Length: 269
Image 1 (cartoon, rainbow, N blue to C red):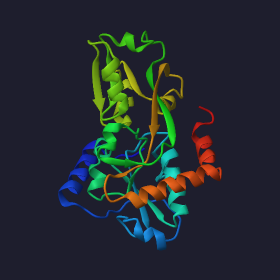
Image 2: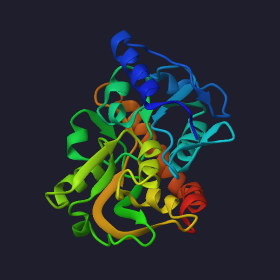
Image 3: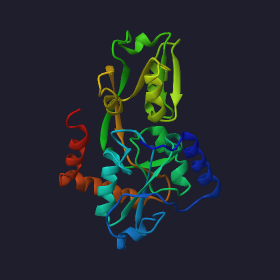
Image 4: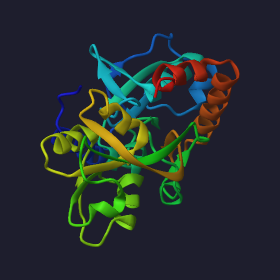
């Protein structure tokens, strides 16, 4: 897991917004040669490289293992970059700055790949690919908890991730006397549940499923919200890139590579 603090992420995002950086370094997790031809017309922040911003860790979609970024989103991005004859660089940023469009508009990265639900509000300041993953929300509690449903959160404290659709769903559906505690990322959210700082966690099902491993926590409720994840680009000026990303996603689904990556992370869930 990353050791960068949320404070460090916030400083990095602020610096970008103030200085309008047009390129940045990052973990080079691609293996393709430098791009040319059509890639030159995509307006990439760094020539020959597809730079993706992601809020890490958020397993199984993005996390760090053996010093490299991996996960469902990252593996898809790697294959997309490879098919575009580009290298892949991954930048770790805070989710709120990503879903608000700040890091994309300021030129820190080309694409946001961070289990981001496509919503009408986000479409106002972001462009999205076609949905690549269907998700649900879920309620995670310690094994043996008396909390079995969202109604049981009355008088309790529930943890959510700031700026997410899970936070929005929670605030709209919990009892009026429930305390909703927002955290910057799952890296702070799940430890709060482990330390009994919150009584439950409400967030995306695949992420909560990861936390059931070991048998100390369980999912007691799932909520169908018709959510689809999409890769995000800046609202204006990334039309060509967005079209290319959609085309490459379609190719991955047609040639079986998408299913291969999907099975790697979800076939036993």
